[in-house]
Amino acid sequence: MDGWDIPAQAVSVSEETIKKSRFITLLAHTDGVEAARAFVQQVKAEHPAARHHCWAWVAGAPDDSQQLGFSDDGEPSGTAGKPMLAQLMGSQIGEITAVVVRYYGGIMLGTGGLVKAYGGGVQQGLKQLARTRKVPMLRFHLQCDYAQLKDIERLLQRFEGEIAESQYRDRIDLTLALPHGQLDAFSQNLSDFSRGALTLIPMKQ
Image 1 (cartoon, rainbow, N blue to C red):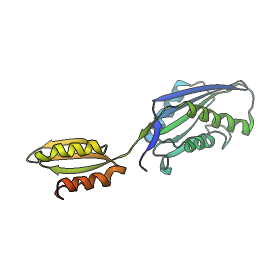
Image 2: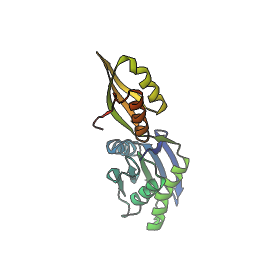
Image 3: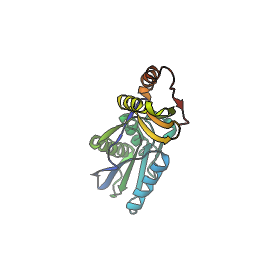
């Protein structure tokens, strides 16, 4: 995957009242499961009087099934967390957590009504959410002569890469970050200008 959408802002909030129950939907950028858990705890602390704090997250890339999670938090099974997760997955946004806070208004909504309220809250929140694109970067080690540095910097600019670290000794030790989709073209150009003398060494990602 060459990149995916993530939330552009830290937290986005939307709210609606259905049959006297108040539903507050909060969407947040959370990079990883630990960040997602922390956001859920933060919302619970901010809304201690709410009856339910239902949540769902896609904590990594949209196609990374290892980083999905959801909870009905006391609502009937399948009426909150699953429809919330379905909305998140359908949006193809990654690194996102949704929490829907419910202040109970005394009127039962039924299972269909709950699915609509929780799934619909996330759907509305997603419509308002500003997105930005995340391109995963791969890291490589490269050793070069001082005379070659300017050409390498030009290549990096052309192929959307960057120097993450540099150490100046007899030669220069560079740690480069490159977008996955630009790797082959960058490597070919690097080989061409250095006549095969310079090669990227993959680092543990």
